[in-house]
Image 1 (tube, rainbow, N blue to C red):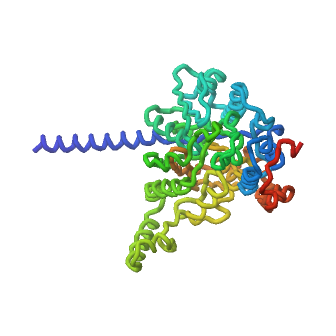
Image 2: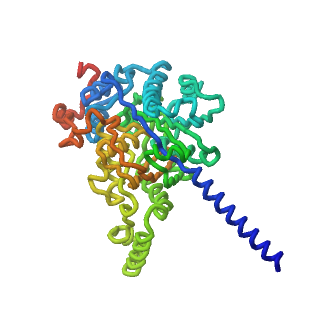
Image 3: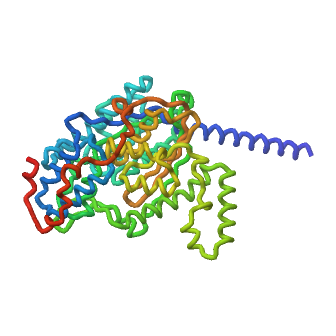
Length: 467
């Protein structure tokens, strides 16, 4: 009997020990964001509607119909008059390797210099993990090697270069950091997120490949993370949930957003009509996993009960899909702020409508798009910066970041705000003027002749039009 009691006590102690070890291990695996810095281009890199038109006109392959398409897309994209482009595009010349590396150096070193200056207690030699995501450029030596050399980082630093991941790549990079934090205790990590535009200007006339010229602009962000609990008091955000969905096994989804050559041999990025369907499918599949994790139990029960009653009262499952009233979960019961990737007005409006959001909820993404354009994977952080500059982020709030990327993938992250945030960051010089009274682009007021139908038969040399 005593032996049995002793064995039971030992088993109990062992179970308690394992439980404590598991809890402590999970605490060490937390991912905290300490700081982030977004890129703000110099004045000589800014492009407004007039300068965009002049750049477009340099393409002698364009007829009037292609020209109309491009300029109308620029007007309706939701992009404002103060976005930025690489210098070789502004100067209408092909890029050299020097242009491409200079573009990366300007963005990466600008944001990292500011990040290290802001986080004075963490020096480059204390960085254990470095992840860089640039989808459209992969030089040798790698971009992580350029950073390591510039800041003289340690020999045992773990470096990773992510390419081809698209506009949600920074969320993928954070997932890499989160998983590495499970292996390394008290580690510090940096994620650098930007995109290479200098060598990727499309010079052909295929409409599905022209869109990237209209939407993408210069931008980038560097972020500092840690799993060191001693630094929690300095952290801004804590990663709560991260869900990645990849539907690349479907051919149409894989091909809907792809780098390719057109019939004339011009290289660009093709966006097909299936893109919206792929985005809707991936987003739905992702939320099916994420929603039960981020919503309170009462809302999940309400949704299940409402869905059951709705199914009983309808004869067709198709009606359920068409009627969203009463059968959609209320995401605002678990999320206070929504950070939709500012990839374009249609993306922001479409996701906002599907989630039942109001103008206040999508305002940060709209303003990030308007002020900085589609900065690819860095776009999330301009929208987050807007929330912070407007002093919306309070301790205990939760933020949902939603983005899509080539492949095709959908990634969502939920953050918890750890303290009241009020840094104006990259918005410092202009936040008081946002939101503007109107987002209407002034271009058509000046160039309304593009809508004149009697010009449709013309094929002109537009290269000197704005000289």
